[in-house]
Amino acid sequence: MFEVRIHGRGGQGVVTAAELLSVAAFDEGRHAQAFPSFGSERTGAPVVAFCRIADREIRVREPVVHPDALVVQDATLLHQVDVFAGLKPEGYVLINSTGTASDLGLDEIAASLPAGRLITLPATEIARTHIGRPVPNLVMLGGLAAFTGIVHLPALLEAMEEHFPGALGEKNAAAATAAYELVQSLVPSQN
Figure 1 (cartoon, rainbow, N blue to C red):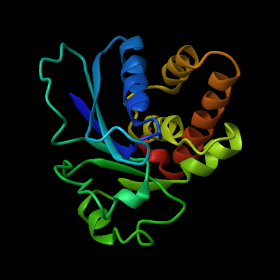
Figure 2 (cartoon, rainbow, N blue to C red):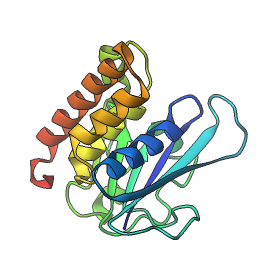
Figure 3 (cartoon, rainbow, N blue to C red):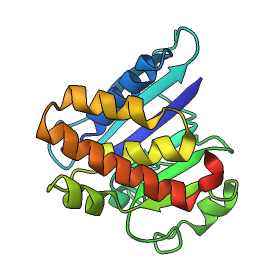
Figure 4 (cartoon, rainbow, N blue to C red):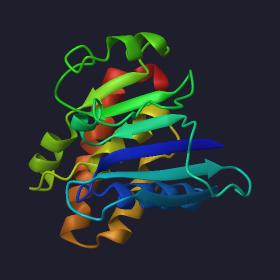
């Protein structure tokens, strides 16, 4: 089973990201589940969502405590919330930021992981360019697909376009594809 924990803020599409990741995995013939965990339901409040993907039925229903992958949609959470809690030693970390791990004060975390397992992605900028809004969620999913290979890009794009039909779906697909290609250029050995 592959477990993903997505951290972000209310209004950034954290819950939608987990849901669409699970839909893409399901469409590829695997079992998947997605669910959120949040306190105050307001824009800007910290939000966490979880996704599990497996080749057989998933019976566990509690939050993801030991993720295989962390997606951090808002870098301001890095020193506010313990986003790295429980991360598996071989885990993946994808952070929405224009800065490097060093810029974010994460050298120690990066050094504790296998080489290349913590990367930053300018998801907000990619979203602004392709969608016209600073919503990084689906951009991050494109990056996650390239980074981990947990889902394939066509399944992810199909899930996005079904959820957001028409021009918005096309824009999100273009943004996710741009992120996928950028991450592939950063870590080509992951695929």
